[in-house]
Amino acid sequence: MLDDAGSDPFGVLDRVTSILEAFDQDDHGLGISELAVRADLPKSTVSRLVATLVRERYLERDGRRIHLGLRLFELGQLAERPRALRTAASPVMADLRNRTGHSVHLAIRDGHEMVCIAGMRGRFAAPIAIRIGTRVPLHATALGKIELAHATAADLDAVIAAALTPWTPHTIVDPVQLRRELARVRRAGFAVEAREFSATSSAVASPVFTASGTLVAALAVSGDAEVFDPRATAASVHETALALTRRMVLDAER
Image (cartoon, rainbow, N blue to C red; front, side, top):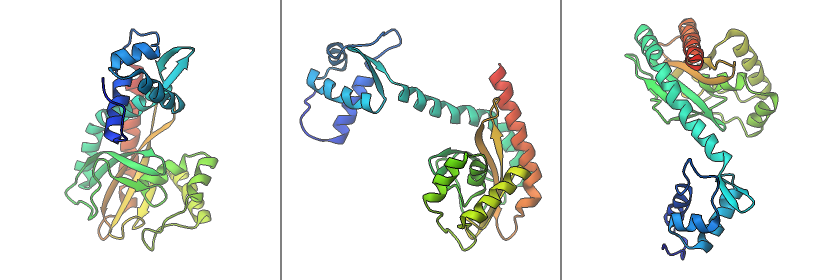
């Protein structure tokens, strides 16, 4: 069995992985002893790590039986969402990129940031490159403004309280001005970013919704601020976001 001595974080990760992978779909919960056998770990190690995993909701305890926890299901849903979105978005993003000549991005929220999950580089690419995995702030980008425009009042208050970083001289850092901007975004159905995150880039974004009407992502086109007019492209971005929403609805009904 593996030695539990030492504090090597990679060793701890290996042991946690062994415990989580000890479960299968036919299990109706496992006891500590059975978990220790399946994971090939000392019983004391399993008991200690299980207590931590239960506290963090990766496992659940039902008397003496241990089950996989809700947090793992939540993470699985997060992993599935980008994949389904990318599949549905690919053809409409390609069409938008071809029609505008500019780069197209699809992003979802993670905490106080938006994360790019899909992107297509256009002929007239913006000076700042946004690749898959790139994180951008909520208040200073068209992608983020879409998210904030559909956030709850409490959520928006929390984002504002966490500080509005001035990325450029054009970044909106006044809470009152930001709230007014977000109200305009809700009315218009699109958000404009004018040199607010990068002094050399501008963008326009629109929301993508699920079949239930929940905001699931933001779709944006970006370009060089010297030549790109976000408002001139807004209608195309909005139409494409609506088309993607319709695809999401149809996929959900299948």
